Length: 116
Image (cartoon, rainbow, N blue to C red):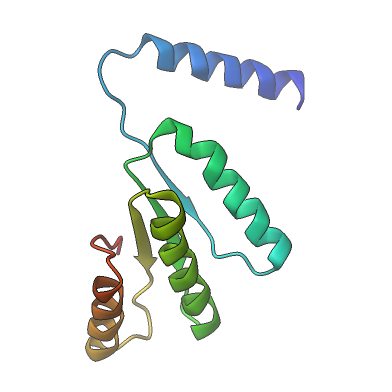
């Protein structure tokens, strides 16, 4: 990490330390495309969970491969971490019936929030 990035991090940490009251944060991730990227994702979620995010979202891509990965990761976040998980739906090229099916599937798996 360069000095510039370290000084930015220190300034951000100082600013956050001075804030009164509760800060709500959330984190959004892209679905990993490789097993190495998936391991990086889980490591990142583990490290960021100490900040107690309000929720963690994963982008729900327009193609079915990304949709399947997003669904798997969202369920994993809920099951493995206890964090509030929310898929970030991209509604392009989806019919109302497809969106209802997607939402119903998440609901049936205990996911109660969607970012759209």
